[in-house]
Amino acid sequence: MIRFAYAPNHDVIFDETGKLPGRGMWVHPARETVQYAVTKRVFSKSFHTPVKTPADLMDQVEAGLRRRTLSLLGLARKGGAVVFGFEAVKKAVMDGSAVFAFEALDASEREQDKLYHYVPDLPVCSHFTREELGRMMGQMAVVHIGILNQKAAEPLIATAKKLNLFMQGKEKG
Image 1 (cartoon, one colour):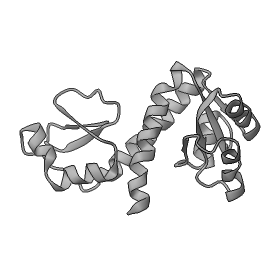
Image 2 (cartoon, helix red, strand yellow; image 1 turned 120 degrees about the horizontal axis):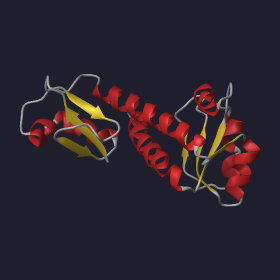
Image 3 (cartoon, rainbow, N blue to C red; image 1 turned 120 degrees about the vertical axis):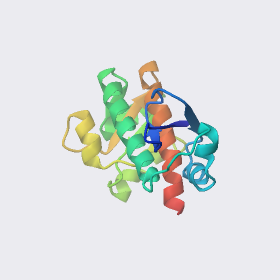
């Protein structure tokens, strides 16, 4: 679930950390669900006060989920819950220690297909460029990142799954 709150000026805002003060509204992280809440004025009903939904609310949600995912990726890296580079990720996937992966959006088809030969049902987030992923790993560019099955990685995996679900609606529409 993702949380929305409203600002003192009565604008609906996306609460990417889920910790803003005041009354909040939790919504399933699918793009269609958020759009439904906007269209049917569910925010005003839930907050028991008239609120305004910004025209770019969907963009704000996407940007917030992306920002939060990258932030948590950096923390997971510092906590030792991340491996990167194809061979390291392949090894972690094969021995069962990697439970989630990131793959560069701008990777070639050949690079994107590599991991699926080993574990076809591995959940993957592929909404970041190789430069964005590289920046989080302290490199120029990274195509593959494996997230290890550790407590430090749980918030990252949960947020990346929310981003995946939200972005599915964008790809359909």
